[in-house]
Length: 422
Image 1 (cartoon, rainbow, N blue to C red):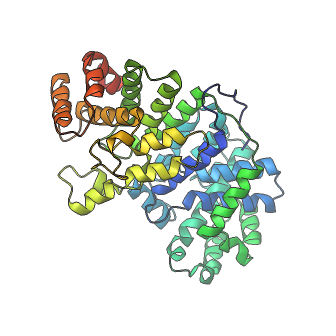
Image 2: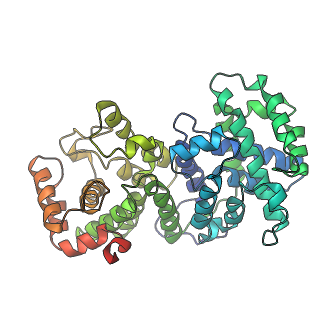
Image 3: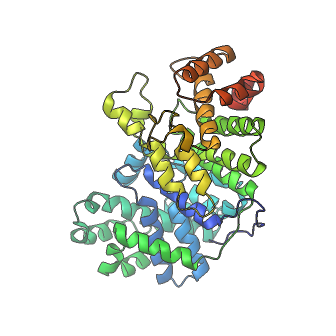
C-alpha cells in the first residue's frame, strides 16, 4: 500500500504499517474460531497480482486491501454468513460501512472504493461508469479470493483442504464472466495449480508471510492526529458490534483524557490514554453476538468469555513498537486495586495511574450511557455508584474525586455529542 507521508511525531513514534497490521488482527477476531480470513484473502490477492505482472507497490496494496477488506464487519453473525454462503442479500451492508470508515482517513483513503465494491458482481461492476477500471479490478480480485476463502473455510480445521481444491477451482471457474472477471479467474487458476498456494494459507505460513511483507514495506511515521483518527475508526467498529455499546469507546477516551488532565498527567500520556480509551475494547470483537447482546445476567460460561476481551486487546496492541504503554493501559482496564480484577490479577500498587484512570472512565461511561435495557444514570447516581466501588476497594478514590470535581464536564465527556443533543 502506498501510504501518504506523515510527519514524524514529536511524541509517539510509531510506524503506521505496524498499527494497520496489528489492527487487522482485531478484524480477524470476528471469526472467533477462524481468525485468519483477512490475512488469507490478502495473501491470495498478492499471489494473483504477481501472476498478473503487477508491480511490487500494487501487489503490496492488494495485500493490505485483502487484510482490511472486511473493516465494516463487527458482527459474528455477519461474518458467519460471509464465510458460509457464496452470496446473500445483505452482503453489501458491510461494504458500505467499510467505505464510510475509510474514505476520510487520508493514509487509507485509496482502499475505500475497492472496499465499497468488493461484493459487487463483475457483470455489473464492469458496466458502472462511476467506477474506474483499476478500482473494478481491485475490488473484483478481492471478491474472488474472498469467495475462495469462504469455499475453503470448512476444510481448514480438519486439514483436508488439498482434497477439495479442484472443486473450489471449478466453482470459481463456473462464475467467470458473471461474478468474476475472466482475466482474474485465469490468474487464480494459474497460481492455485500448485500445492504451495494452498499450503501458504496455514497459520504458520501466514505469520512468515506477514513478517516478509512488513520487512518490504517502507516505514511510514504516523502523526498523533493520524493515530487518533485510526484508533477512532477501530473504536467505531467495536462499538457497532452491540446495540448496547454505541460510542462507548469514544466516551471512555474523552473522559479518560479529561481525568488525566485534571490529575496533571503529562501531555504525552494524555495523548496515549486517549488512544488507549479508543482501543480498550478491541478484544470484544471475538465475543459472540449473543453473549455481548444478552440483556439479562450472564451465566458463568458467558462471563468467562467476556472476561477474555481485555487480554485479546493486549495481544493485538503489544506488537506495535511505540504502543507499549497504550497496550498495557488498555489491557488493564478491568484490573482492581485488591488484585481481584482480570485478566492478570495485578495489585493496585503495580498499576500505573493511567490504567486506573481508564478503569474509572470505563465504569463511569457505562453507567451514564443509555442502554436498551435501562436508562443512563444521572450524574448524582453515577457518582454514588462510583463511591460505593471506592468503599469496596475496587477503584481509586482520588480518581473519583477528580471526576466529581466537575460532574457536568465529566458527564459531557463521557456521553457522545449525539446523545447530549437528542
